[in-house]
Amino acid sequence: MQDRPNVLFVITDQQRADHVGFAGNSVVRTPNLDSIANRGMVFDRCYVANPICMPNRASILTGRIASAHSVIFNDRSLPWSANTFVRQLRSAGYRTGLIGKSHFQHGMSANTVRPSALGPAIIDPYPEGWDTWEHPERHMKAPLEMPDDYYGFDTTELAIEHGGIASGHHLHWALAKGGDRECLTQCNRPDGPGKQRSDAWWQIFQPDFPEELYSTSFVTERTIHFIEEAAAESRPWFAWCSFPDPHHPLTPPGSFWDRHDPSEMSIPKTFGDALDDAPKFMSLLRGLDPAMDPQRYVNPFGPSQQVVREALAATYGMIEMIDEGVGQVLDTIERLDASRDTIVIYTSDHGDMMGDHGLIMKLLYHYQGVIRVPLAISDPRRPSGRSQSLVSSLDLGQTVLDLCGQNPFDDMQGHSLVSVLDDHEAVVRSGVLIEDDFPMGRAPGSPIPHQARTIIADEGRLTRYSSGETQLFDLAVDADEMHDLSKNSKGRERHAHMNQALLDAMMEHSDMARRGQPNADR
Image 1: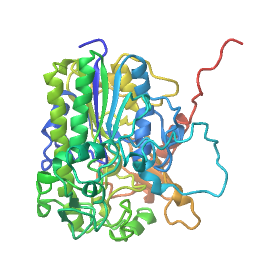
Image 2: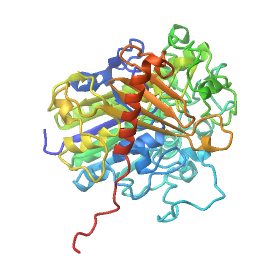
Image 3: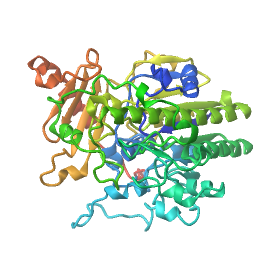
Image 4: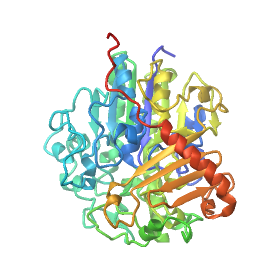
């Protein structure tokens, strides 16, 4: 392998850890993702630092927890001055590219922003417009020329929206291929264009344009183009290959629409959980209807069994399209004779309830379906294997820097996983801290908590909500999280021990970062 290896970083959006073949799922077909796992190390206990898109993506990029990098929810952008592991690679001479979904800025999440009548707590020091690069409206008329250092990326080509909508650079790529603007931009609504749409939930539909114009095809083609360009320059490269799927709306295009029959999908065995011991807001959300506020596609609700079956079938079709795209990228690396010089990482930003405990999507749910994600790292220099070591999304940035021979920057809070890549039994952490904030929950009388904090350890999962409610599960004997020990006197000692571990983890992850380097010449 060359001194500075290439890195292909494949990240999906809202994909559960068990929605991939190498995790034991026998329904979804993912031969290319499985090949990454077979050649590398699989981390069966990889947990997010935050189960929401923007906070966890920023945590992966910075190696810092949300309360440290400040993106605690989808209503605020990663500060322009934030250091990232990609900036470290760029400074070391790497060609760096972001292709697909970024979501480091809140452009697609503008509807989550709630104005305040009060003055700001922090005065914005950045030039006007710094946080509008991902606003879809800026990309409508023509391809937007991105900064040459977008959080460390020298090449940035965006697919901003989800489902059957094309936006950002993806839109103009699809228009150049003959796509119809209305079909490409108007389908994410109940009455939008679409070939087939579910009667049970309008967010399950087949887009009214061919799969060749879909976001997965865009990410695949443009990632290949970036790699070919970097190879022609004889420079090491880092490619953030970011697929917007399988996040809802669930819209497998073309031949991927009917790959799976909903009637053959299995309902999760926890679907009928009465949630008697769960925090009260979960039962409230489960009682909501999927048709509530149809102009917004982020509305948690209680799915019927039919919705779950259709959602699973559509999700598997989307994942299989991603898998084929990843296969094309891997074939390109092989064609360029770069396989021995390229590290491949595959993961997701968070999961989805997908019917577990009678719930769908995510909102302060810290069940395994949401907080655990797939992770496989293939390094040609190292053996394959499977590890049960606890891993956090925070660890990915430092791992990439370590694999590429680069130093971390100040106050990165993760741990390099290189020792685990060398020995699957190695341990780098005793617990994983998970933060989750919901600012709208601070409104007077809100039935939904505004914060949740979780610790994952060998003893299980403890989650504490701002409402004072808790959940405690022994994952070793209750992997389905059906028996809450926090309501059981027998769990008192375990609860006290894990509560102390949670407090210690929160102190360990408090922000100790400095702005710039202090002047020692005094």
